Length: 116
Image 1 (spheres, rainbow, N blue to C red):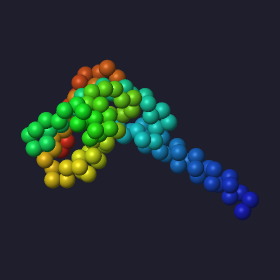
Image 2 (cartoon, rainbow, N blue to C red):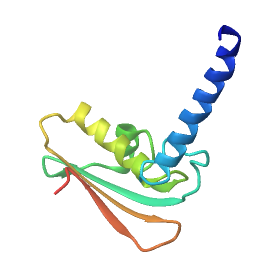
Image 3 (cartoon, rainbow, N blue to C red):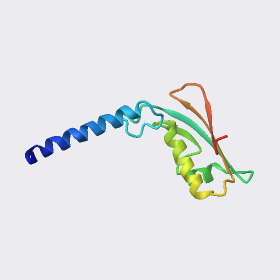
Image 4 (cartoon, one colour):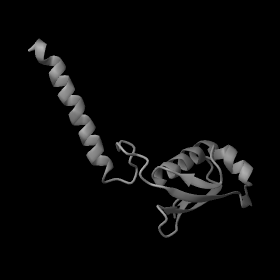
């Protein structure tokens, strides 16, 4: 039995990978997808804190990405990044974020934080 342990560990590892890939195909997050760069997301981020808008430079510093650009991952990666930053930087909830985005050249959509 001990001689077969590496075999069973290999099968277990492959089964875990297969399960994660299958899961990622049915969720918008796609963190475990083998081809995570299969979407092009065009986006524009607008942020106001206490009613005062942030500049493009402030947005870049806040999220470590430009206020307008392209991301080659799921749009939900961008949304997760913004949510984490806002929970850390503005726990009082004064910030309002609007992301206008388009996936693979499709129609524009709007995502907001906090969610309405």
